[in-house]
Image (cartoon, rainbow, N blue to C red):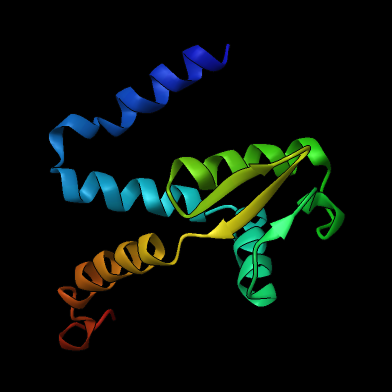
Length: 119
């Protein structure tokens, strides 16, 4: 059933009609649009170090939920995890995050809302 939903979702988005830059921005926005993922990023940033072991010990989420969100963040290049024995060390990917934020900032800097007024 998930496969059918993915096909429907992609056909509604029609990513092929948009340029690569817009697709990348949309993918980044999709990844950071979930509060659990933002909580994971925030936690990793606040600790200012890599987290060893089960990150669900630090967040009010189940291990399964955290694992799913960690995968999304890894796939987007926002974090990386290195296996250390039986544990995984999770770290923010600072350069990747800065690059994605710069693209987001560049996109929104072109949309100058000061010149428009909704009435």
